[in-house]
Length: 152
Length: 117
Image 1: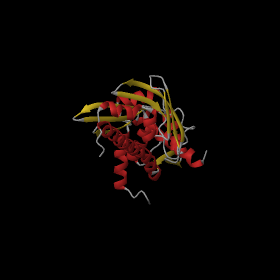
Image 2: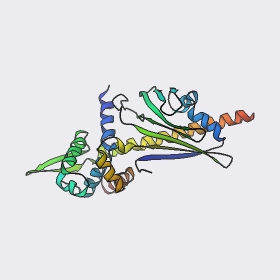
Image 3: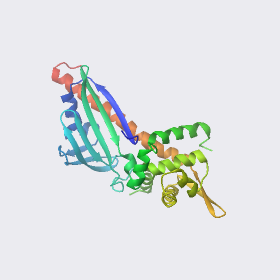
């Protein structure tokens, strides 16, 4: 797993099939993500998320393996981010669902923040050294924050 | 599009690249350094380092000062903190979305079982 990723999970008291429908059906996605959603739910299918605040985000479905795996590529919406200008800065979002106890463990990984620019050779060299990830960067930043008066 | 939106995206793109994050990381450790020094510490050419420093300079993440024939670069910490916050916001957004998914799925499940809370 690349360190250029965000990983989060949540335990849900509902069966895997129920969680799957919330995560993948357009009318349900519209209730937790965007104001309106169009999804062609098959590999290579188009995605369209309309956000009131930042405009439209487009993407492509990558994997659909009901009811356990759903992934897509998109331009991650950010406050004040111009979605049109950000085209090409794709990240990958992967949802995985598995039965856990009486319910479901839902995990999301958004990755690819490090693939935004730079040459392949540079990225490969860095990946090989396991360096340049957000982890190192944020550690260093925390160090800086405690050792210097940033507001000065 | 607004200037703020353009600027936010430029900042995001500037720190989205692992080589540039590595450069910032080394610069923070060194305090001040030239492109030549930095290229000696990273698996990239001096030319590539200069190109990345130009990108970082443009969005205000580093500042250079001329000393004789050299240019010494240092990190602008306030700007760097802003960039790191963009990543933290993306993580917080997923926490919110997962919480919403949990609420929706559990409500649907209760309904299906015919026992409203």
